Image 1 (tube, rainbow, N blue to C red):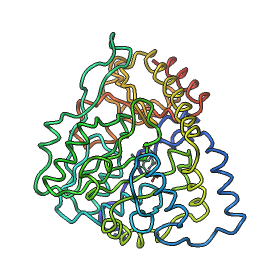
Image 2: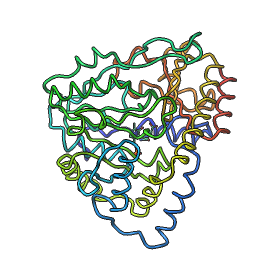
Image 3: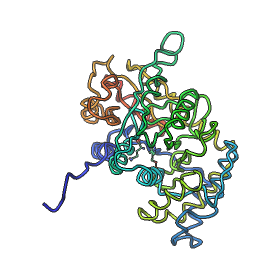
Image 4: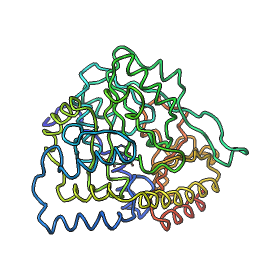
Length: 394
Ligand code: PMP
Ligand code: GLN
């Protein structure tokens, strides 16, 4: 036929958002907010278009945005980043991840991720011809006095993590705060990753797109850990922090030789990224601390609303420390197979959610088979309506 090989299927997020639109279901599936960006950020983009910022910006990114990213790394994390050589602006975090993986992984190299993992990692490792190895996120116990106060605690076993590294490990992909679980990785886990990566001479690709949406504890960038810097590529995005997922402005920070390798790929993927949005994101990165706190507090209230609603219907909930998502085990409601459940939930309950199995390979996550990911980055009315529909259904 015309097409050699198989055609990739639409992602679970695209498929489930289409179902939500078609059925008028509450979309707690795909992780995009339905709330507005900070006014200063939105106004800056509108102004840029009106003022003629509409042609190709420099491939590595507008100088003003690269400077703002370097200043952000200094202001929040004390990291010294040279905007001329250590920063690359990309079309969302996705393109930074793609360029890094395609640029740094050779066929047959092993790439390590946690499991479950954000879906793009698996697809990109396959495109690069890498071998995808995983370390399982498991239930570590119950939190809080009565087991209800905080719920199920998820995390990784340090020994299992250390044993997953081999001499063929080329790259380890870290994602903290983590999608889909909402966990913030323990500093001990991050340190073990840096130690093992150093011992095996592997690179570290750290996806920190939820860095400003940490509700419990603090975000620890991998690049701030001792000896991590020289082998670490840090990826982030404006999408989550400023509620502008459709703008697709992301970036990578790394030592100059790594940025050069990543830029070599990025230039052939998109060459450059959304001119009028770049200055607006620079304005966002310069917002005062109080604005960042407001973004977090607003999100916290929505997390608490959804967590309470899921508990009320009898789910076992893992209370997320960060990000956009809450994981719930629906086995107490008789649902053993979340993938099957999430196919019928839109019709039966009028709610769309994503099974955790979508972030795993077949056979890889039997311990998470009855777990579902619900997005809480939605406005309160949507969350309330979704909870009320789930109560009727349960
Ligand atoms: N990494 C993670 C962990 C994500 O959850 C997402 C998407 N929400 C991305 C990367 C992609 O980010 P972007 O939309 O900026 O490409
Ligand atoms: N990152 C978003 C999520 O996890 C989805 C982005 C996408 O649709 N590719 O829901």
